[in-house]
Image (cartoon, rainbow, N blue to C red; front, side, top):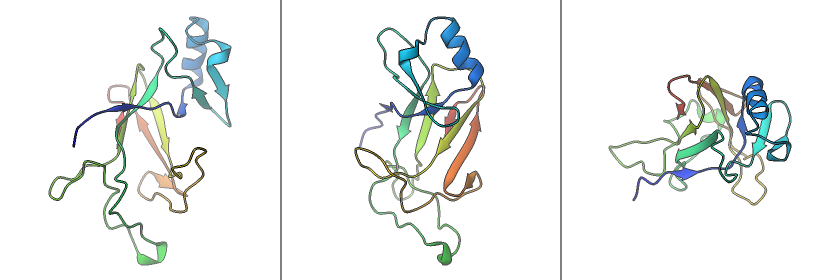
Length: 146
């Protein structure tokens, strides 16, 4: 197993002030942003020569060996393990926002592993989760969430 980090080109939520600053500085053109519902934006995170904010996946969820619980089975029996989790050395899925300074919000939900992802049949639960969607405030110093 390697501790290789991967870049992601998934949606991230940017504060409106930051988006406006990027546009004013000429770092973000109209073709780079597709506005979605609310403040979510799909960014081309790897345009040539730009260091735009992007989400780096530090560790993916473990793909096998974890059984989701039904709500009637009671509370969770531990967190969702990360792909590098081993017996006696647990790890968890984690992400980091790079090329950005300030406060940010990371919003996570489960989706299917398909060309066009769909909401997953299972839901995330926990202290930062509501209706299967987990929201974590990060920054300004630490932009990592797990």
